[in-house]
Length: 435
Ligand code: SF4
Image (cartoon, rainbow, N blue to C red):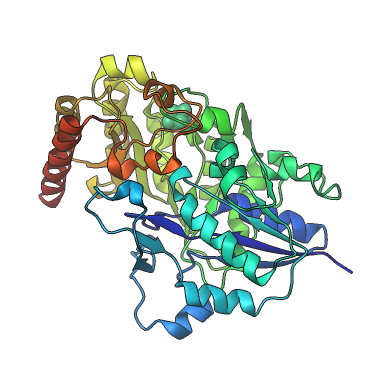
């Protein structure tokens, strides 16, 4: 009798959430691994805008843009007490609770339930998901994995009610619990099981795992130490597989896409094989690796949006916090991209706000600097992440409630600075409207 797994991507509970090419890639890899071992799998992504049961119940769904980005279905829910001073509405993003229950009620009893997790401060959505699953399948063990489980394992073990908490990459760790699931190296993973969705606006792909930098505010060096990358053929075949599925947009999930020594050859193949897909780079690209040739190839291969990691225009600050980009490298890259044919609306730069080292004056200067280049700036709000220098500098530790990591409340700032940064956000928004 084949084993049966239920895989769940839980709700997001937060003040804001947006589908910015957001899919639970780790969970989809796991689904694929299980299927390859002849397991039967049921899959439920609570954030799925097109789940048939949701479509039966809801008349109007949020719109998506031409590249597949859009709002999630959402409902206002009570705020946790810790946020009582924060004036925004708190929401459950994803299918309504009654829809979730209706779907789960119709599922056969699984042998194992796998729940993933992402941001540490989204844990209330994870806990509610597990609570309901336990009502329907009280005897089935629940394994909680993903980023929250990895970064806050003690908290997850103490409060989540999951039977097991897996830290790190599930495909390498699960064999300790389920010996028949042999560990997989990243480069040997099967394609993530995107076919489990009824309808897709986009797929996501990883050509490499890890990052060669070590920024004080980032979890990647801890979450995925080292750097591994796939062969050109395996990436191209996966992209062709999505093309055959009718997918029009693919987002690269790599943390350091341009550091992949195979990336240039991947572009060559996309051009040579005339693959017609819109490509996107939601995780910032590093200007340090750009050349005119690479930029030209990205344009010809079908990149439609380019997101650059700038974080701040201050060279001194870069020395303190990340050492990953110079002003010169950034300016040069913008020139390359424009020469290749990318227009101003396609080139975006991330600027980090909410990190104490980046004072409001510097943020404003950085916004103006990016605006002067005729490209779009995006303010990325800092969230303190366990096991990073930024987290320790705030004197946060494993006993700090992860709700306090929420970037919406600017946990890294004192009250006067927080007010200044909120004003700068309004300034940025006005500037964006004049673009
Ligand atoms: S470059 Fe990006 S992914 Fe790499 S450590 Fe810095 S923030 Fe993280």
